[in-house]
Image 1: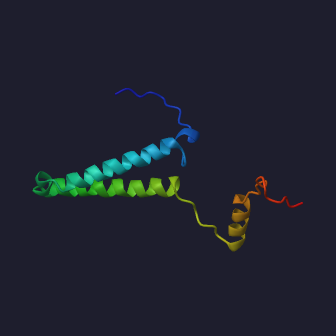
Image 2: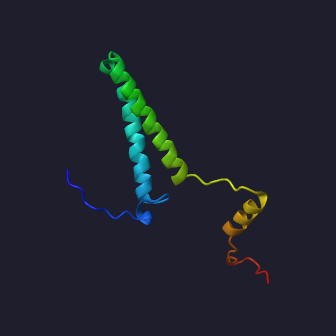
Length: 104
């Protein structure tokens, strides 16, 4: 396998991007498949295999949670003041639509 330099860009792969969402989706698929594998009869008959499959399923589930919390999550404000300023920042004043009186 040859190493090819890949330029990673946060805009394409960072939290909130389509690339990050794709990683979240793939992790979900792998976690589900690995969980299914950990319950396969051949795996259940061998303790070492069962332990490895369970560890892999657990690690993928943890990875899914970590990616999801950063990609989809929004940290809670530390103080009431931060919460207020965050709400004010998110609020927009829209121009009135036709038929609505304009406030000056």
